[in-house]
Length: 149
View 1 (spheres, helix red, strand yellow):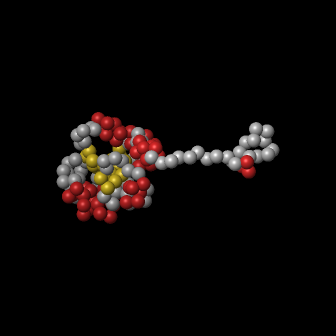
View 2: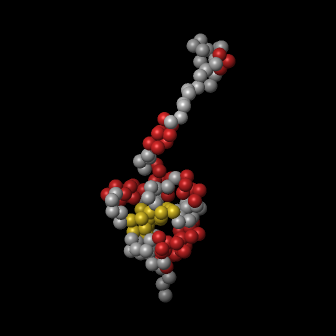
View 3: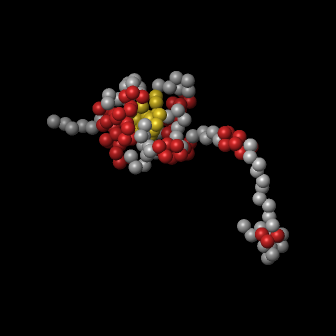
């Protein structure tokens, strides 16, 4: 009797980025981020579905009823050692087209197009005053009066 585990597939961040560009309007995949809320809020893939790992079994079927859909899972660094358990639960729930983001969110962020336009807009609304040097900040040992810092 053979006790074979289902294959755990990985998708590279570059491949996921390509999928996102090709399927901008009609995505055939869904990204499920199972990291803790604080990690998710600190940075996540736009359009990803956040389901904390401890709520995965209970909530995934109602949030993704199409079980044949391609599911890309983002694990946190503390979940990586639990990948076999997560995978088994997804298979048990009826999902068969599962891939895990190789390198996680950190690797994805290295190659992603970062949109900071909202941050720049927020900065425009503030009264930004550049730092000014005071005489006490000048190094008397330097000829050109360089600041001490």
